[in-house]
Image (tube, rainbow, N blue to C red; front, side, top):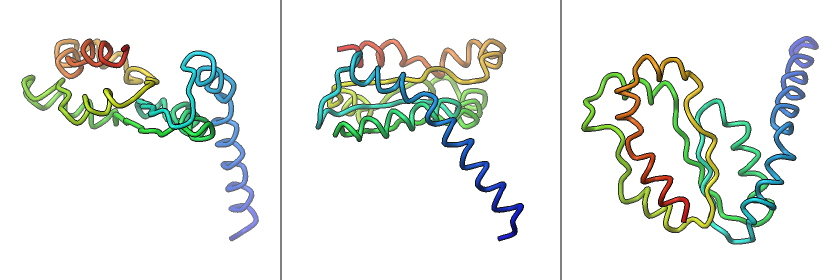
Length: 143
């Protein structure tokens, strides 16, 4: 590896470390003071692409306290493609396996909404159909 490539690799690593650690204090506080997570608690962390740095910190610190974690990831471009191309009756549904995970989880952390909120506004009806399960999801997760 050339010196320039090594320096660039090191700089990228430093940027990533700063990016991931800037949420650390907030994440630790949510885990300990808001959620009161204990060892062996089942925890679901849900996020979109842009929330992955925060979700990664959640997963790390949840495992640090001994929690069992599940990461639910909504890929934004795939979400938009489905939302814009598929019929409404195929969108916005959660199935039994998702409800079973929610039932088994003691805690739930959600880093919300797609980053492209203007696209949601432009496609309001299709966006609404795509997230039609939200109210029931939040109600079940709230317990």
